[in-house]
Amino acid sequence: MELGASRRRVPWGDLLVALGVLALGGFFLQGALALRVLPSYARIGPRFFPILVGVALLVCGVALVAQALRGVRGVPEDAEDIDAGAQADWVPVAVIGATLALHALLVGRLGFVLSTTLLFMGVALGFDERRVWRTAPVGLALSLAVYLAFTKLLGLRLPAGVLPL
Image 1 (cartoon, rainbow, N blue to C red):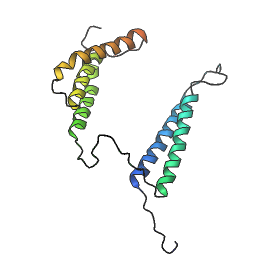
Image 2 (image 1 turned 45 degrees about the vertical axis):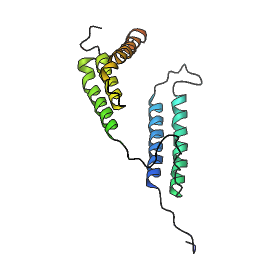
Image 3 (image 1 turned 60 degrees about the vertical axis):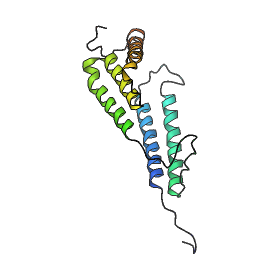
Image 4 (image 1 turned 90 degrees about the vertical axis):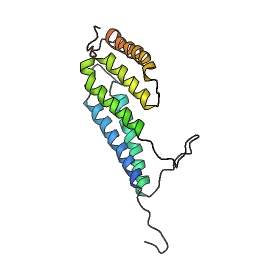
């Protein structure tokens, strides 16, 4: 080490993000290579775009790891209406997370439409909507539209649950 040269510290948060991007790229490539392709595809088949995304993620991940190991930190963006020094409010995150867990538990019993309506109401509550019952008709209409689109138009099966759909 030269005299006067300072040793840079590795920014661990940036390195973890870079490793996460690398892992995601590997996950994409693994999934893309596991796809079965019929011999009738001459050039571009169903693997092409997932492989392209996986390779791009790997290249970005390698570049981010190199930056992090050199001590280069990501510069936070200046946001328009955000106070960077404000304390984080974890209550909405907890409400939405609990609602997602409840949805996962109830989707098989209540069915897609009713459990997704409850999910919509819980997310609205997490975003500080105090008149949650006003969001129920909107959530019901959206989840019913999604259910009908998937089951009738696409031929996929979603759990009907207690509703006679």
